[in-house]
Picture 1 (tube, helix red, strand yellow):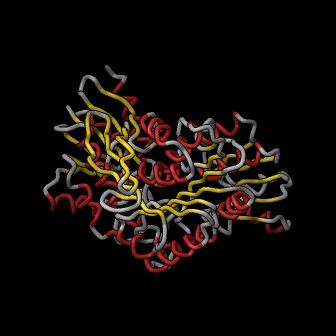
Picture 2 (cartoon, one colour):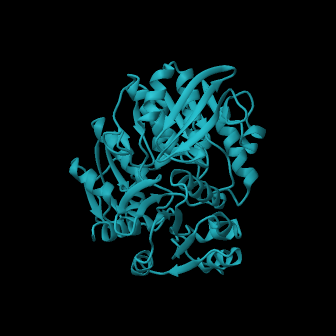
Picture 3 (cartoon, one colour):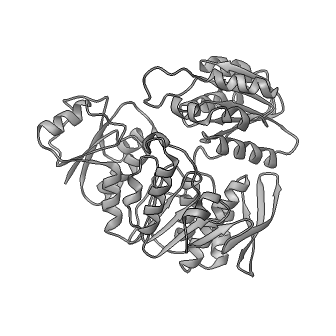
Length: 447
C-alpha cells in the first residue's frame, strides 16, 4: 500500500508513518513547515513536500489526514476528485490497534508521561512493545516511535472524541477534566459520556484515578490508583534536589520506596498508574522500581534547556497549557529548587480555551515570582475574539504578581537578561518552546 500523509510532521502522524514504513508500506507526505520530525523522517528515507499543493501527489492508495486539515486543502481536494480513499489519523490508529494486543493511555493530563513510563517498564522487563508516543523521549529508538512485536502501547488523544470508539485490551485513564470542549459541543457532560463509552470497550483491564472526583463518579469496577485512596496508593512523598521519593502500596502490602528524577506530585500519580497496570501485567516490582528511577522526561515535560552560570538561571521548558497543569508545574519547580525564585514565561494556547477558563490562568500563575505573558498561540482558530493574552496580565495585576507583556522573542530575551538566581519556566503548548531553546542558547553560551 502507498500512503500519502497530509501533515506528516505532526507528532502522531509521524509515528504512524514510521510504523507503516517499518511494515513495508510505501509512505510519503507533506507538511506546512519544516520541523524536527520532518528532518527525522527524511533521514529515514521518507519523502516530504513542504507546503500543501495539488501537485503533491504520487498516486497513493490511501490519504491520511488529521482533523486540522480542512475541506479546502488542495491535496484533500485532489484525493476526493480522483476517488482516493481518505481516512483520519485516529481511524488508522484504531485499525492498527484492533489487529494487535493493545494498551492505551488517555485522559486530560499526564498521558504522554504515563505512556512513556509504562513503555520503559515493559521494555526494561524484557517485553518488546511497539510504542506510539505523543512526545519525544530518549527511551524510544525513533523518539516518538519504537518498533516491537505483539503488544502495541499507544498514547490516545481524547481531544476530538474519536477515541471513544477504541477497544484496547488494557487502558489507563489518568483523569477527566473539561478540556477541548469545543469538540464536544461545549458540553462537559458530552465529554464525560465519551470517556464512559471508551471505558466500556476496554477488554481486559482498565486503570483509573481514585482521587479524581469525576473519574470516581463515572468509572465503576476498575483497578484504581491514588494518593489517599485506590487499589494502588502512594504515601510518604518526599522531595530533594532534583528528585522525589514515595512509598507505594497495593492494599495493605508495602511495595517499597520508589524514586523519580522528575518533579511534582502529578508525576507521582503518573508513576502510580504505571505501577498499577504493569505489576498486574506480571512485571516484577523491583524491575518497575529500577525503570522509574532511571526514567527521564519526555521532551517539553520539565525539560532542562540549560544553565546560565553568570546569572545563575536554570532554564526549563514544559508543555503545561491548562491552569491545573501550570499550577502543578510551578509547585514542582519550587519543590526541586527550594528557596529559589520561579520566573515564568507563559504563552496562552487558543482563544477558546482563554474564554472558557475565565480568569483561571492568572490564578494558576499567581505562585510565580514574576511572569512574562507572551503573545497567544491561536492554533488554527480564526475569527474575531473579544479577548487576548492581556486578559492574563490584568488578572496577574489583581493578584499583585509582577508581570510584563511580550509580543516577540527579543522582548522575552531582553526581560530575561535582567534576571538573576532563578528557575525560568517556559510554559505553553504553542511556539513558546522555540523561545525556550533560543533563550537558553543565547544566555547559557554567552559567558
